[in-house]
Image (cartoon, rainbow, N blue to C red; front, side, top):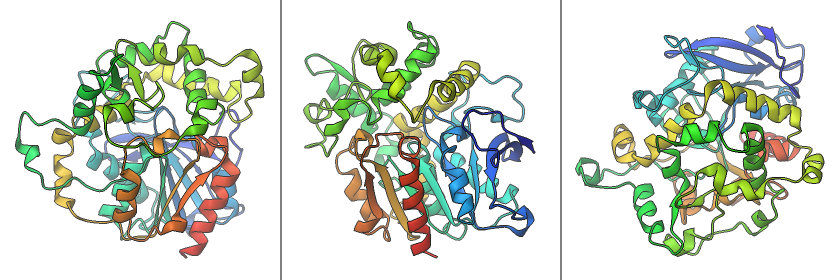
Length: 391
């Protein structure tokens, strides 16, 4: 185990590698002060989303350990310093096999991580953004291991139904259908998940005209509470092109533009950058360095499995109709459009998570999509309250 060199990461949080599934997985981990790790304090597993890393949990790990928990946050498959054991270079190409990035295998990665740490039980698996469905499937499939689940920013609507569409070669996923609807708008638009699924996306994200640092600064800003238009985030009227078109350009993009082009006009001014306290430049530089080395294709492959879900979610049908029966909480920023981007998803989540309750749906005011970075104290407070309630 080695001490971290990551800006803003407490010295108590260590960085190391561990063999997991077919991966040499990079993790951040920490234990309660003065605790012997061999005594196995109760474990929390924190799962990041896109485009983030284990590093996105840097502000919440230590406070959770002070409450008596062991905490581990991995760079998930395709991200950061985590590598397949046979891979020598960090970059993943568009042509590679998507099978390792399908949801069932991503959940298997986390189960394998738990066992590799010497645990057979997890107090809570916490997933943010694309980490949310991974956490949800962990709790859905292995409730004997994952004793509770916290879903952040992305509502989980349950496993796929036993639909005949899976056997229809002409059937389209919801994302594919929505993209066709959006292209008929005036002016025409496209869905960000479909853009993320294109061969061009990785190159355009890695090499934006304004440079990677400015692009990531803008992308994190426009999805945060710092960007004024996010103050109006709320439920959409319907699942229709017109209703979806209300979403900002980082979700519903102009048809002919890349993601960097779609948000370039929202770049922060010098005074706005100075005011940013939740992601200072030194911490942003760590993300820039990591994604400059690896590119984005590993994370984008998760989206490809989602947008072509009739192919890559087929193995999840065995769980059709199954619900999450362990204690659950949904936690997000109040200024996060991601909570509402799929009309009806919140209600479906409340039905799938049988023990979530109204008090288990929490929106943190003053936070956008990056809630654990924007409002870490509130996230910690809500997590500890949830854990205490479900001991």
